[in-house]
Length: 421
Image (cartoon, rainbow, N blue to C red; front, side, top):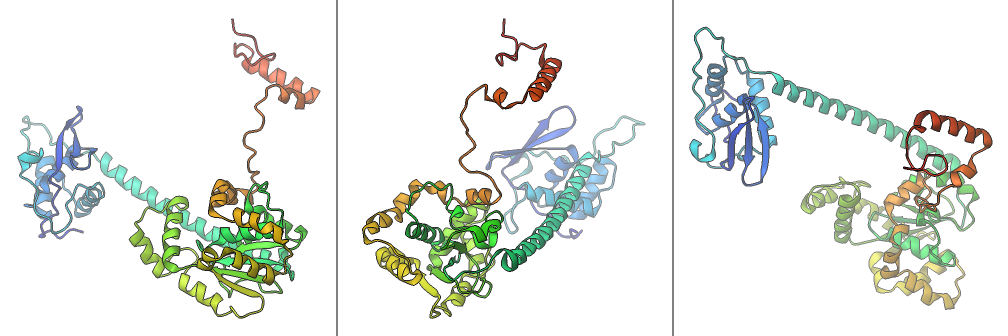
């Protein structure tokens, strides 16, 4: 609540106001930002009173004198919160606004002349009720989102138990590509795809061949039917990765580059609206998805000497891709003919992968894991094949429904509708 004896915050000097409509409303415009808001007579009166010369007590008294009804401290605080949210108020410590006449607000602090016998007009509660309803709905939405988050988290835990204890049985030739996000995950997926197949880009998405292990919804149901060697990508820390006779290729990348790349991913796919400075602070404190980059790298680095762990860096891949490919081949025991190397190196380059970017898009990966068939939205664009797919009974039902509901129209669908005159 505002202190009754403390001066109130000041409105911004760039605000101007003028009457709007016939219902006593005003249009308040911020000349600097170009934004306009419609406010009622009571809100305009209060905004005009934020001139640096009023306390809460004096403004509430003036409001009561002007409108014939008391203004509570809570109502005044709600108005100040709304004014601050709309950008009407100056930051604390800024100078006082321009004189009243200079910014279009009139000295409207004296009671109006009333005809004898008329009762003073009471303020209309509509604006306050709308704000209260908006706050209640916002609170309800926050509670529902919180409950949804709890249920979603519980569902993920159940899925994780099923995945690790029922759906997945490790094999000696399984290969896990493990990274902290934005550290070369997709690049390593492409490298392994090229080393274990003929390399043709006929797959709808790389996730079909190398799924994201901990987010597997669709692909997990077919883990046991996948031919060897099975490839998986993961962002799990070393302590949580499924253990077994598998092989693990961990790729680390310099933290500064990870932070910048992760920031752009957050903005592009997570709807993040903060600045890089704000995100970088979260990154350093481990307050981003997948936690601390430092702890993630440290955990895997401590196991770099394990015989089933190959620890690589993004910087090594950039400097000597061919040398890293040979280390991967030796580590996994792949048989890759030497004559394929030039084509593999070319297809693992940034230019080639950029041409096939849709095969690596994480948004499309999520759709594919949900069961969506990619690249099937546009079929063939022909007409008439729907009639061929119907049985005689279905065709008869359609004709009856069409004649009943659209038979009197002239829509030129073809044989089923009348031709236009």
